[in-house]
Image 1 (cartoon, rainbow, N blue to C red):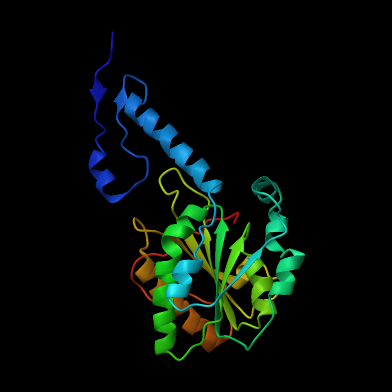
Image 2 (cartoon, rainbow, N blue to C red):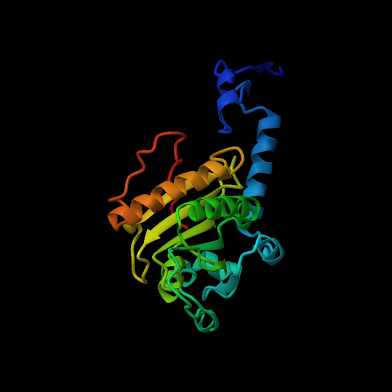
Length: 253
């Protein structure tokens, strides 16, 4: 006998989250439509991991940004996934490319991370608003650095080589089954190779259905001002600005 579909009593909560809740049931099983939706979401997440950083040069030029291209020592995507350590070190050619010219207050790195598609969609709106807010405060931005096969800590070497006071790396987070387009922003004051994660601040879940880019840029600037005032970033720098939550830290990038 085929069991009828039963609605979940928590169904009303689906209005407030993209999480996989209140799926209903058919007998003791998940409904077929939910099983197929899960497989589709899993496929989107896998696609995001293997997505490539878009050619943002045209958009950056049109917006008046100088930019530099670099890559890590991970030669292929598979090597990047197997060897996170290689994603934290610049390859030799990129090392030669990074020649300092001045000491910018803020250096923004746009990196593929674990979801280049998230960065392709969300990085430029954040960058534009961040430039606007930096200009209002008299802070200088260095050239935008486009980094391929990059992990978060690659920003430390880049920032150190370009004499930046602070780095902001916009990077694709590990895709979730309801958020393959989620981008994170990591801030590090006085970047230098060898720093560990307690020296960084993270704002995550930057996407249209999460923390929208304009609000993310506002929070990034709030933390930048705090970092410059206190001379520190990471666990010693707190976001007590109120407003929308930053979201959870996504590890492993």
